[in-house]
Length: 83
Image 1 (cartoon, rainbow, N blue to C red):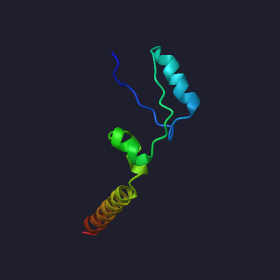
Image 2 (image 1 turned 60 degrees about the horizontal axis):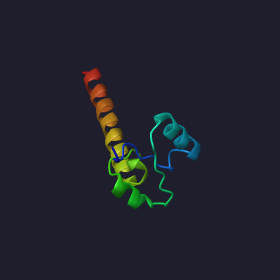
Image 3 (image 1 turned 30 degrees about the vertical axis):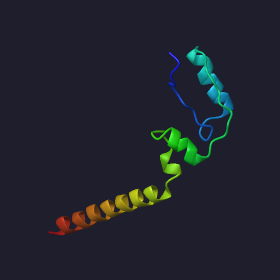
Image 4 (image 1 turned 90 degrees about the horizontal axis):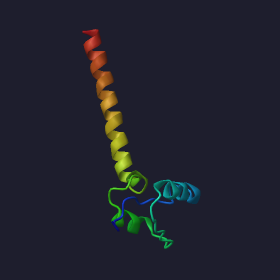
């Protein structure tokens, strides 16, 4: 139908992997060899997996919240367990 169905990123896939997927689809494919910066890629494909690789602050914030939750659970367990 002429619409984009799948966009594959060379940051995560080898050229051989991309070609294997294209061959398995058995449809006409178009390869755009023009390199994109990460900013351009994520602007063109905002829902692409891998967002965490380009946003270290999100990763730090997520890990901080996870660590905080673990500490809260451990503290509550210690308090409730000794009562």
